[in-house]
Length: 391
Image (cartoon, rainbow, N blue to C red; front, top):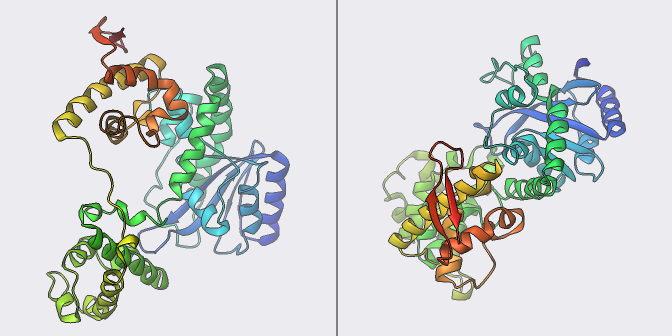
């Protein structure tokens, strides 16, 4: 298998032609995220059955041939925990990959290990040892060393073989469609970070009243714009907790804004007029344009007890099937199910655990548990799946 570091445009275009002919390629990136609004792409790695290659984006400036391949519906793209790879493709094209495979997710549908590191996955599936001595390397520095390049290429070298074995097992167990559906969901969620509702995921935002939420939303969008212009992380412009506090206080003047504790830094004081403008814009919105509050969760005691019982049932079913409980559903997913089944009387869109392959895995069992149709007993304390749920 040939190896190379590509620094010339014609070499890169030739690589893309090779990938197009193969129809399948492993893909990984090295990037730096902590200093920028969006991660700075520092290296791209590709692996086919015939060759592995790294591409230096500081030298090869036109990567459009690759992004076109990544988003077509012909080329299979194999990644491991490829959230940033999906985001890079979406950033440059506005599109999702056409045929993406994530071997980390696939393994969660074949075993109880999720999320497994690349080294652990290569060891489990191929019995191959992968070293990771360059995890803290400075990928912006040039020239890259032979050790850095070798480490980077190892990240894609084994992915085609891993996926070939996983695909065979998924097909044998009738789970390939589960994997394909989960790859699609993964891509959608990976690109949801900066959607119109991203502000709701900041701690404390949804606890505000509707007017306060409108102020916070305005502040959040403004901060993203400033951060993008400066190419800096959004939180370095103004901290989340200060945005929340300003949304609570809703200052009408710059003096009011700078009187908030923590706002006395010189660079924050310079931002005060823009903060006040955001507040005024949000306060001028009519009531029908204010953000809606999320439905309240079930009562705490009910939520805790039912959620824990459902968690036991879910863990048992996943143990029986040999799949990862973490991948199938989180405690938040279980709480959503309790709310939908008990509080909402199954009105409205069904929660994640009652959709797609997850419903096939656990939907009937969890519904029966909530409706009191089954009993639980321990059948073998030493077994991987020690319980039995019976009607």
